[in-house]
Length: 405
Image (cartoon, rainbow, N blue to C red):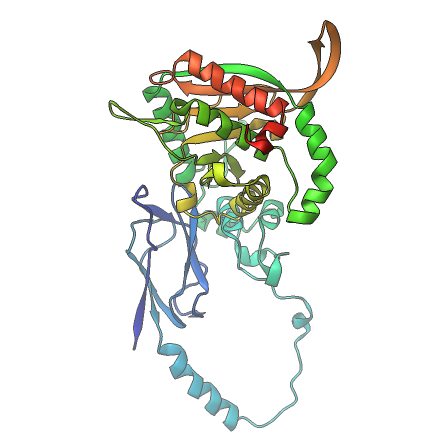
């Protein structure tokens, strides 16, 4: 017997422990090298744990829902078991007389795969649905997030065995369901309370006429997509405008460490992205050095991988300033909460045609309300207001962003 241990992958310095979701294999099942065995949920991402070698899963040390730390043993694989079984299969084949092989009638139906993306696996786990009962529409039968969202029901046994608590019916027939917070949701809640209790948060507002950006985008969006292979959105303009303002007012890009202020000589911009597990904030490193196309490509990549839980810990760590776009959901106005240890965050909202006064005349313009929340401990109102005005001016004259002036 040759045993290989399956270990919890290395976690980042800021992540001390993780939670196991649901095992895709059971003891006695054959496994292939690099086949995903289980997903591990941290307070930032879901990590897939592959089989380190081929063989037979001989033991599961930590079950579904267990709390684990980096390097801890999750399971053991007998790498010799598969090799030992092969000669027996060959011998049986030689001893058996040749006979016509007929496919069973059930074979006409496509086999369902239990392989699911991390996001889909999380949703099915919360619903108490066996992945094997869901037909995947992804590549090679992989269960996608949409497949999981559409999946309904599941046997009562599966629901009872699942990690989520089944629905509880009250005496008057009104249903309630108690479901534990995911590790990410609990961490987000903790950080929001930390932000509000430790920072002196104020928010300043301004309005921006988006006509210049919209006309520029309309003129070049088709050529841009053809040239760069990605759509030209609006977020890249907000990123560029934010960087321009942060360069002029460095304290807005700073952070507090005890009684010290740390001024960052780089611009790592966090982009808030919604995912099935909650809000995540991947980081655009050195955003000042990125072109509009590079920013759009990274944002598109972040959004796609956030849906499947594929963002890495490094991509979610750090950041000197954040941008949250509630406008994609139709928000008109909000007061975003600072992402510690950062000292400011920009909230952008839905662009709508609104009446405004220009040269004494009422005209209709596409307007967006900007909100800058800041830590008043180190950022005075003057710097906050001027920084937001600088963003407004850059957006209303987007050619300045392209020329760097």
